Length: 91
Image (cartoon, rainbow, N blue to C red; front, top):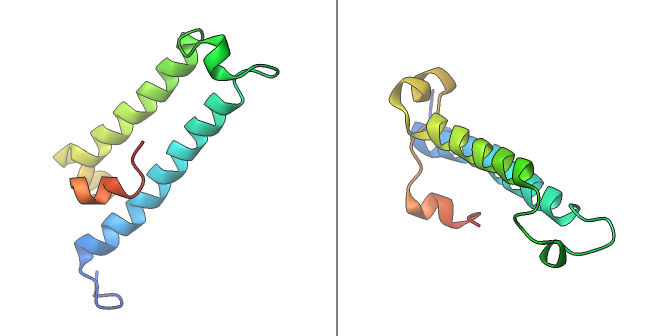
């Protein structure tokens, strides 16, 4: 991959992979927000829907596996993200 706007290959890959992970975080938050139709999540209780929490946990686990497993990094063209990369869109 050639340099794009004076960015290295690793910087471009970090930028490209941060977008989908940020969107998945937003989708998880949206689903938690719409969990109860007439009552807030805090009134219903965060742990009342274990399937929803399990699905969110599984999605996070799969994302971390893709990011930090060397074999999957080659397959999905990802690079490991550092703490400063996670800071912009962490929970």
